[in-house]
Amino acid sequence: MHIKPLALGQAEKEGKLIKIAILGAGAMGALFGSYLSRQNQVCLIDVNEELVRTIRRDGVEVTEPDGAVQMYHPDAALKAPESWQPADLVIVFVKAMYSKSALEHNRGLIGPDTCLMTLQNGGGHEQTLLQFADEAHVIIGSTQHNSAVRALGAVRHGGSGNTCIGLLEGDSARLQPLADNFTRCGLVTFCSQNVREQIWEKLFTNVSASVLTGALQMPLGYIAQDPDAWAMCETLIREAVAVANADGLAFDAEEKISEVRRVCENSPQGLTSIYADLRDHRRSEVDSISGNVVAVSRRCGVPVPSHEFIVHMIHALEHRPNSAVPLCPAAMQGAVLPKNRASDKQSI
Image (cartoon, rainbow, N blue to C red; front, top):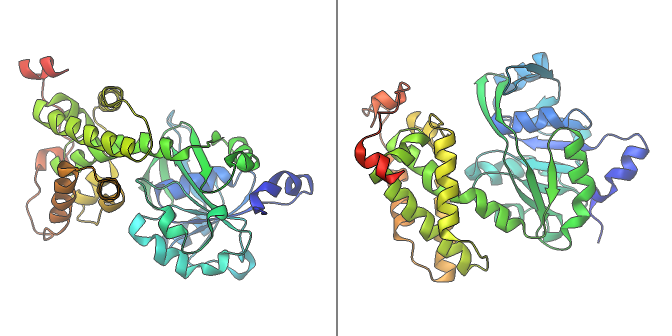
């Protein structure tokens, strides 16, 4: 079995650039595309014509957490250029509901040795990728990096961390040349034999605190501070842990609850993508986040009534007409968190 990224080391010795196509030039796609362009041939592919023109003309501006600004110049296109067919690696960074159409539209990128990678939020993305490549060429992963769009062709790198990748089939250590390549570009990456565990680790926050920021239209700090919001968050975490454990993992619910609370308390004014999607009347990725918990629960026979409720709630909020009055106008204008009440202090 031959997987093209395993040849990275030899390609670099021969002075060849690795061809990496990134589907989606939004916040995360632009960030990863910029960093990876340091040592690779990178093409950002997006359906936004104005964005593609801006990147081709000016490049991508990345503002780092310390305020430093760097300019990068990856290629950009509306559709994969013929010279890119096939790519060595295709990274999917579009929203989950657009993954299939993005891959269909750029099927020419995928050759017999091309690997497909997803670092998208949520879980279950591999099922879409498997429609375009076999298990030996599908890479799933999770990253602690976060990014936000500042303007067209400009993103703010909100925070760094590790990226973890693994194969669906076979020894994930075979991806070490790819992990090394990412690390040299400034994206510290590790190979994992149980990458599903890493994905669930990130999912616990996404399916609890993050989804509640969207439903309540309040920042992360409010979720930990308000006793009722935290009670809902804790219930969502416990249900998710029960599902993950039924699916063959071994998480401790109390440990995960403490970790999610720390995330909220360390980023009290933090806003999430699902918050922004609902605020701006866009479709969210709830089906690949909370919906993934529901799907796995049905397969494992573990009830998750709170997650089923939250999925319906988020979709109901998505269906609101654009003229609808915002749920929390003050929060949407950047309201400061209220001072702790006595009951809040007890819950913290």
